[in-house]
Image (cartoon, rainbow, N blue to C red; front, top):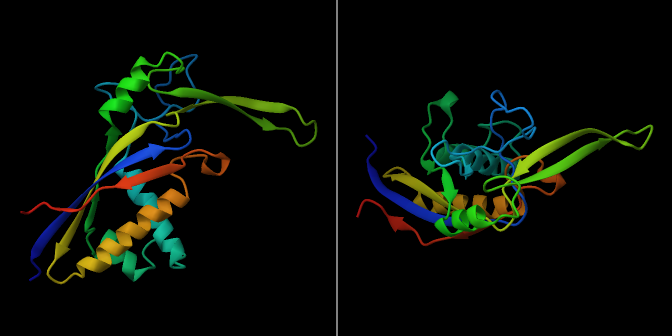
Length: 204
């Protein structure tokens, strides 16, 4: 029977180098509101980064790097991220990332933002026949410069290779920085910089 021997905790500051859009449901959108709002905390209206978004994007990039054509096609990635079809549990946790205290204050006090903590970007499609703008839409973004505090936990069992897990996780961090998170990344959104802190053994 495998035994849990270590919980390795990491904290990281995620800085937005370009505006970020991670969408929320538009079912209850207000008349005159933006077409594509960002996801926010109900308690304080602050935008946040869902752990599921970070985990899903990191896993996808790691699998692409290994030539996996589908989720679950890389055994190395499965060992850390899990794969339900093979009853492999995930051994890495991604917490939702909230705005840092400093960023939340700066965005709240910044009267240049269009909405609380966010900006609105107008985009259009271009007609290929007339060359004119069509289908204008408003996309809400968390502005560049905002910072979020992210937390990760790697669970290590006595049958695992701790160094392999750490190496894979750090590779995933580098891949995220070279890619994007959220929507519209090919149009410049979601470029991030990640400052990873030192690991802590959470069981000590």
